[in-house]
Amino acid sequence: MNSVARGTAPVRGRERGRAFARGRAAVAVVLAAGAVLGTAAAADAADLGMLLYTTPTGKKASLSQPEPGHCYTVKGDGLAANLSLVGKTAHFYPKAHCGGVPVANLGSGKHQKVRFSSLRVDAD
Image (cartoon, rainbow, N blue to C red; front, side, top):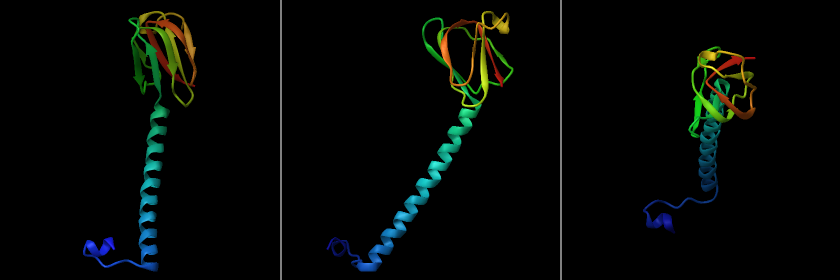
């Protein structure tokens, strides 16, 4: 009855089932494509890694996609976490320019409280 009110012919029986099936198939394709693309993007971001740390003033900070072997002169004092899902170890140093012996080495998925003045990430 609503189709008549809108000025379109009513859809009956098999025609309604086919139209419904086509609509469901289109929705399924769109959802599947979104799931694949979203998962791929998340995996790429995880491969590049991310470090979370607490600054000396107590603020939360992050270092996204750190380049392996590069020294980052950033200070931290508190909880630090290595969120990389691939084999990367974060080394935290007591001096600027990655000087001295590391005070902490955090592998992928690890966290701990640490005070540092610089850090470096190495691929394992």
